Amino acid sequence: MNIDETAFKILISRAAGEARQGLEHQGGANSPVVKLADVLLERAIERRASDLHLEPQTDFLRVRYRIDGLLQIEDNVLPKEVESILIARLKVMAGMDTAKHQCPQDGHIEFASEGRQIDIRVSVLPAIHGELMVLRFMNVEEKILNLGELGFSDKNMELFRGIIEKPSGLVILSGPVNSGKTTSLYAALQALNKPESNLVTLENPVERVVPGINQVEINPKSGLNYMAGLKALLRQDITAVMVGEIRDGEVASYIVRIALTGHLIMTTLHTENAVGVIFRLREMNIPPYMIAATLTGAVAQRLVRKSCPHCQEEYEPAANSAEAQMLGERWHRGLHLKRNTGCPHCRGTGYSGRLALQEVLVISPAVREAILMSADRDRLQALAEREGLRTLWQDGVDKVLDGKTTLSELKRVI
Image (tube, rainbow, N blue to C red; front, side, top):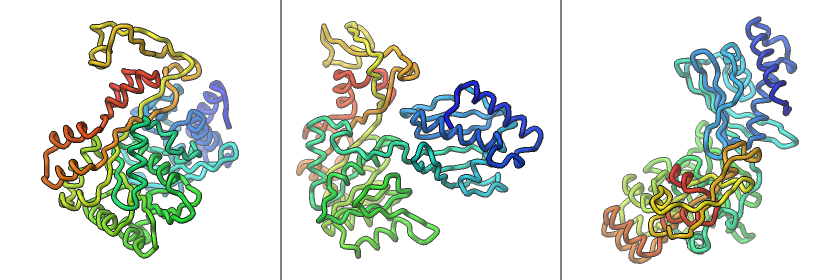
């Protein structure tokens, strides 16, 4: 139900009028509020947003879309009158209790858009001006990327393949929320997906359906939490396991034990960089000798916005410029970088799509020994770099020099 801006404004006005008159339940499927909810979802999908935020303010309802990792405000303001009935409509679509307003709720919407079923996860949280609602679009991009499409440099790709193709051990991807960790894990599973392998995942929720892989969705209400799933997996004759996230020390301890039994297990953690994975495991009370015995590699990842190919222009940064200082010894006279002016293709942002930055830490014998000796973070970081680790910043600078992104974007993310 794609409509132009004028029609969208009219629809908002009609929905507000319906709310003022208390007629929102009389129009059925033709109600302006019902149509407004559908249009907001369609606009988010059309813009390839990962999230849609509905945020009650003092006298209006703010709508924001997360596009390429950044929140962008909807140009059209929704009047306060629309707030309660729009939230209520989306709650109904998500299978939530519309009578509850003072407690958090979760639900999901199966939304049909241009012949596709889009799975939308919905979260509601009470705030001082009303109920905050965030809708996450789980499969706007249906394609599952392969390893070659993840943006790894040739060297990092070689290292990453090396650690995921080992028959056993623990591989951890780290980074903040929305850094592409799960996408990379799915790509790794695709690379390992062979007829002779039994690959199983434990996820909360399942974000993509991968043909040929046995995917299990965590359901605490039925007793299927991460610990129950992990214990059951050991009776399933598995080759490799992907666990969506290490939630606590108990899960971490069991994951390490599975890795010790000769299985490959891949999972994620929230850490600042690849070396930070070791210290996060130590904080979860995993003994250094267990980390050294099981961890085969850690990958830190971030997403930066890709430069729009339609509005790029070259420029030469001056010797005393901020760009030259950021580049350090990579700057030289005659160096040309690319920047973007903004155009209709990128909605004036200068960016279109996102690109991953990675640093890949392989647990070499020297690094393993340092883990056993409980080396501090600075020593481990210095050792990893001597052993060949290229940091997120270094990987990002390489991609800036290739014209794939910009220094300002790299500085924003790293």
